[in-house]
Amino acid sequence: MLRFLFRIRPLRHLHDLNPITHRPWNLDLGVVYLLDSSSFSTATTLSMSASQKIASKRSKNADSVIALLSNHGFTSNQITSIASRVPALLSGNPDKCLKPKLNFLLSTGLTKADVVRLISIDPFILKTSLKKRLVPNFNLLKSILGSVHQVANALGRCTRLVRQNLENVLLPNMKTMQEHGVPRHRIVKLAIRYPRTFLQNTAKFSHSVAFVKEMGFDVLKWNFILGVCVVACLTSSTWERKLKLYQRLGWSEDDAISAFKKHPFCMVLSDDKIKKGMGFFVEKVKLELSFVAAHPNLLSLSLEKRVLPRCMVLDVLESKGLLQKKKGFAYCMQITEKQFLDRFVNKHECEVPLLLEAYHAKLDLAVFPS
Image 1 (tube, helix red, strand yellow):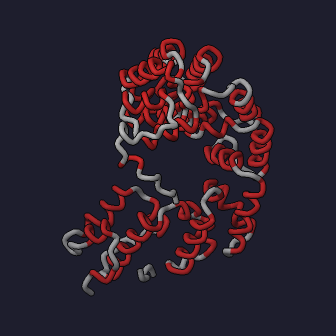
Image 2 (cartoon, one colour):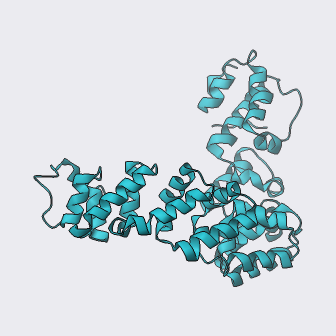
Image 3 (cartoon, helix red, strand yellow):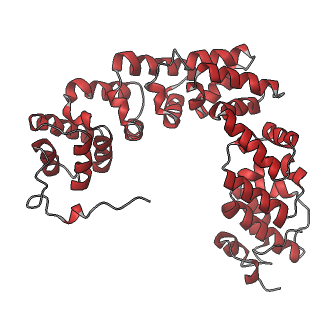
């Protein structure tokens, strides 16, 4: 049953130029200073210069900023990235503009590694008002999410949580969920795992919640939360386009809605992934369209990294009569890597010694003797 066959244009070579004897004459002294006092490449510094030139009189500030970031655990590459994305940070007084923010973030209970990671991801945090945003937002998040650890998890997924006005978006959107009967612990879980959802426009978010509820989702279940998460991030035109794509591939509109209710993320898969997945499961594995609709999470799995290797293993075992107990296809695809190895690969190491090697190498069935 399972048998089947298996732009970015490069920069000019500025790094080949001697930075002292061949330095471009149009760079001001502030940029030249950075070339001499740090590990920034000429190409990177040129980019920074194009964004915002740093006056020579501010070179001491730049030196202090670099030293401050370095002392807080930032690597040379991270400092380069931060300065290229927010050049103005190098021209300010670090003791007034940066140090208080770094000290506050560390005082919250975030580790130094957490702070370095967050600022490297989003250096605009250091341009955010300490009193108007960072302090009140962090305190609010901690009161909602329950711990610094959970705040760190949420910020790792969306650093805008400390930069936006949460009273205008986060709180109203959470209130909307509560008004529809969503349990508080579900709301908190959504804020931790998919925080961007709560930063949507409040009118759109309210519409998304009502739309998902009208589809028949149970507000007490996690899938309702995921449904809101998906709908809130899609435009109406994208939603309609996904529905039509599934219909062109053989599902009815009811099939697509049913699949969405089972696995909401099937509506945010790329068109190419949807087409390849549907084609493979229906044409190669010979599954019914209704079966795929009943198990839409199959479409989210990686064909190359999970489905194909597992199908090869199952095909080999089936051909050798080693599948003593028939397991459902969806079950075999969805169990964890460890479970699959234990139940279908390692268990048959003696009978099929090359099975593990073939599985990891994603080899064709032809390597096995008949």
